[in-house]
Length: 411
Ligand code: PMP
Image 1 (cartoon, rainbow, N blue to C red):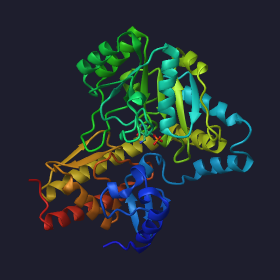
Image 2 (cartoon, rainbow, N blue to C red):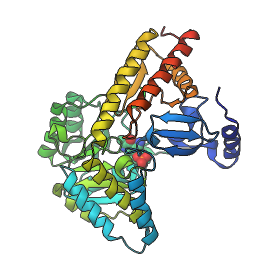
Image 3 (tube, protein in one colour):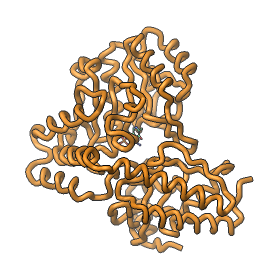
Image 4 (cartoon, protein in one colour):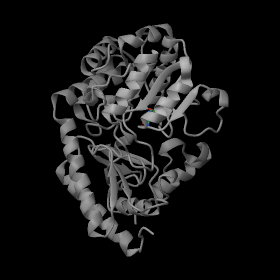
């Protein structure tokens, strides 16, 4: 079993001064009871919990870590900027340089705005679309995550019906459902917002078909609405040009964050000229949105991703992990459902209706030194090497042996 006395002590202290002891997706009680809540260190593809237990990590800070934790060149760029100025009375040259770099790198972008969190970017995309079109309705996929503010939070506690009055849901990937939503919006359609691919929790992930993306694009072209790609989770992991570039479909607006600066706090909206007037007409800002250190980190991250084989390497490691996990599962008589891009894997145990097997498997893997998530997509980074993947697969093999010995089987 894992030493966890420091974690327990911190949880006790936190419960007194933090509502529920922790909030949001990092409240580990909602992952599976027994997960460490607090961490003390991260390096490359490894993390250490507050008690010093070391794990090969497959959450990558829930997405920001794309090159490896505290990547030397990225951190050096950010720290050099930090020593000169980070937040000041106005932005630095870095802001313009980063916007130039992003518009040159992304295949759909003519301009950029910067924020701090993914929700800042998705929310401003909606506002820009409404401002630019003079319309109200936003079509979104049921179950898709776009952030944690009233218009899009997965919880409706504290949210009014008015906050969501102009949202029209449809079923992700289903062209007929999208057609019906567009018809319902009539002449009031401001935007269709879609995640880069379907990565909802606790279900198989789905990549978009080119035909589906083209259908969404055609609706926007016909009606004058804006097509928004929420690329917060997948951006700068799958394709530097933007996650739909391989489909040849260009969004009018796209939201980025997470991997954009390898863990330094940064988000961006990248827009096409078609959406520029809307962006010019709204007021959007934040105290820390002009901070230059994260922008320097973003510049360094994008250049490293462009000039190295980091993304191809990560994909190769994802393939190695997927194959290894499948083999480990079948050695013990289990079948996995591994879906989505290999470098952002969703790993579910087939027939595991209430996720009890997946929870037990991930807890056992934790004890063997691997940090997995039982129902959220995971992330690989460029610091994962073949030896890390092989060690992780060995650990998961032992975890399967543990749950098999405990008699945990699909019904
Ligand atoms: N959109 C997507 C697709 C996301 O995955 C997330 C974060 N998980 C967000 C938006 C919100 O980003 P943030 O938590 O940085 O506000």
